[in-house]
Image (cartoon, rainbow, N blue to C red; front, side):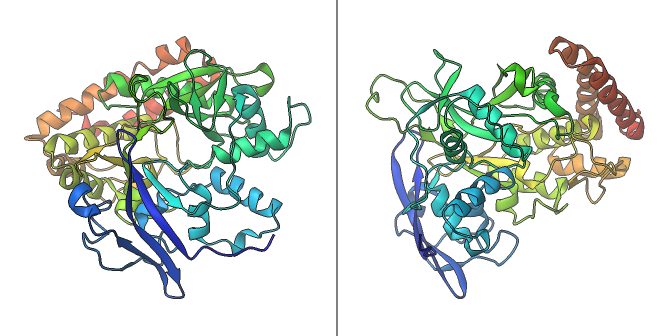
Length: 444
């Protein structure tokens, strides 16, 4: 087919009750990508990105970096890693080289399937229209095969059809194989890529032997989500889905999507359009490059307090930072922190997602602690606590100690979830090392 790059896109937003409103227009020329709000959008719903977009109807040129020539808020709708792999394969199948494809083309390909409430039209002609139901097991096995770069001939059904479903469900971020799926609680083994009334929106994370924790990635993240819940860090809802034996995994982790608003069947049974909340990552909000250590917890806490207009939010982000420090969740980059905007323009922090055991080879965090990637000094964390709004170091230290005490329960929960003893012992050893390295934060 002859490829014609996208020059203009209309941006819309789905509100919490399912209504769709027009936001503005994106247009591209030789200078770059411009955005312009519609005349009445701002006065009704507020600014989509208060730190980088002007609350006006002026033309606004996107910076060249760090979002590939897009404004950060729209770049949030694009996948990375796994999702880009799927997109590129689809483009190649139609004779289009990935280097020909612009960020605007990728937004058109995402259309209305991105994370969050934004949608882009007209959608790409290559967009996959996929009304079918699928077995989660088949999708997971195909995703695993693609991720491992070995296609299996043993999959049930048509592999191309399953691949198309993965493409339709592959607009989330992250490098690991996953799918945005809609599950019916009455038939948990089946899924679809389009919502129907009564469906729940989930992000299902598949596994691979090539991941750090292999096929136990989902089990270990489930353990961390339970620890985060005990620490009052507000993680998302989750469930473990039994994986087929040939996958090598005991279970896959499914995380409930918090950008979706559940709608009652009564009153709106004739629509499959669920309600949504606008979601904005710290990466897009602060123009941080998630691929490099470009974010600091001091900056994140200040931005959180300013955006959400709440000192309590600063303290919550501080406790999450301490959880990451002592739990060896060092993949805490700027795309793993997000905010949700309500229809009235107010903001809240998103649930604490992608919180799992993720050590860096050099023991460095992607988000720094006031300039320190590891073992932050006592005075640095005391300053961070003051920035977060704690009235005293004693109050902040009490929260740190409670977090560390909760993390001591890792061993028991991991064994209950069926994590292998060798994996439990290896993680436990690292957690003990983190406590020892940062023991100055716990001393009276």
